[in-house]
Length: 464
Ligand code: HEM
Image (tube, helix red, strand yellow):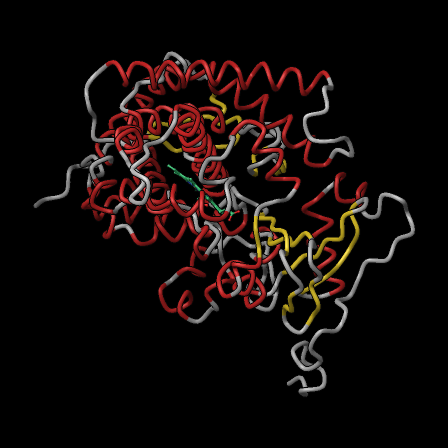
């Protein structure tokens, strides 16, 4: 038991442990070379609140669940998104929900929130399943020819198509590769730009390529909005955003605001879920016992019947698998904030303008809350085990008022897709295919995930 004198809470306002460096760039090059290793190691060696300098910027990594809760929930008013990371995203997302701040953000969130109401998104289950079945039909041919697929790419196309239909009533299938390509260019540029020492938007060849990709994306989304302006009302997010009026001023959104929200939903709404699924397939393929258990649950609950929304409560282990996969590979691996005023976290001083880093990747490996942190063990998410942990030991969707608006949407989508795929195929990692996470805006498999597809013998549909 630590004595009160040893507790980090006992000496308020003291300086957090720091990684000392005399280098002009501070820890910039180590952070840039391998951010996951650098941050995990920094917390392991220095503790739950650790300071360092990135170039001229003073930064603090907070790891303890209480510290995460403080920043994201209890004292969230003191932390905004005026950070370099979000400045970069603002270059192409403008002032959408993810990137905006203050009263503007509050108003947009109020307008968008009803579209993500559980009852409303349940109506999307059918599209999620039918688009998955289309993909599986294509996979029949792939498997028949003995070919393999890049699972990361497959999941990206599928979730992109789903977000297009459910939120915009638009089938972006034909545009999928164009959009996917533009998103990849932007993502790669954004990753470099966040770490770069140049001003955001400085016209390097990469920035020019990104601007071009952003223009292409704008054009695709602009066309979707224009088609809808000319057409009929639809019960989707775009329809709601187009009709919504500010209660105070009666103003509706300008085309620019609409475009920012739509682009944000498009990007935030597919790549994260795609990566969560890709990592889940990878983990199942390397943990056959766990895969067998998921299949047994599926067979018992559904027989061969196509999964539907109403089946999900009967697939608790499948949900545990997805949660555990997002613990090890949280698609949003880093949430950054700026301290608006001086503050104190776990007794440590946080000075005004400090960059505060909350990393799900790092906290999800906190040995105080996660024994054998690197092990894949869905039992960690049994109801009893979940209950026993502090809420913010796990935060793949963030927390507090800025918590992911698409949380329930994403979880429903991931469960339905995983169930439908596993009923038909056993994906296996191509031997020798290298696997490692890449820290772009989301945590992707660096070299994709080349997987073979073994068809699964059909199970008789469960008796009513
Ligand atoms: C597994 C999938 C997903 C993960 C892991 C994820 C993760 C997150 C996280 C961590 C945040 C908070 C960022 C911060 O506080 O800095 C966030 C915000 C957001 N997410 Fe998601 N997300 C996912 C899926 C989705 C989906 C499906 C949508 C929309 C359809 C979506 C839309 C948004 C939006 C609009 C925000 C900004 C919310 C606000 O600040 O008001 N996300 N997401």
